[in-house]
Image (cartoon, rainbow, N blue to C red; front, top):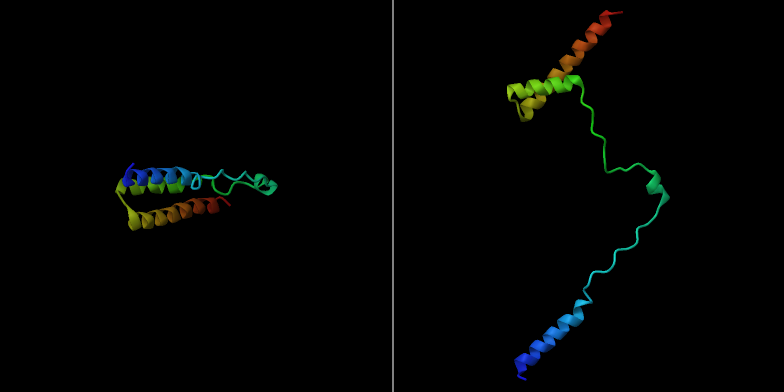
Amino acid sequence: MTFTSRLAVVALASLLATGTAFAQTAAPAAKTDTKTTTAAPMDKKAPKEHSAESLECSKQADAKGLHGKERKKFRSECIKTAKAGMAAPAADKK
């Protein structure tokens, strides 16, 4: 055997021997904690219900083709006027 072939055999053997040293260890067992099982999950939030005013103002903004700051400003003003318009007739019924 030549020196290079011996060197190749030694390198291959060392790779095989050290491969187990770098092997992934088993995952730790899951902890059972009564506090986490009784608490509500924090990572999922319920989708927020949008009001009728908000949906209508979004449709109007879409129709006008508004995006970005202009859309946000338009929707804010639209929702304020829609809510003010709804509150005024309710006050008149007294």
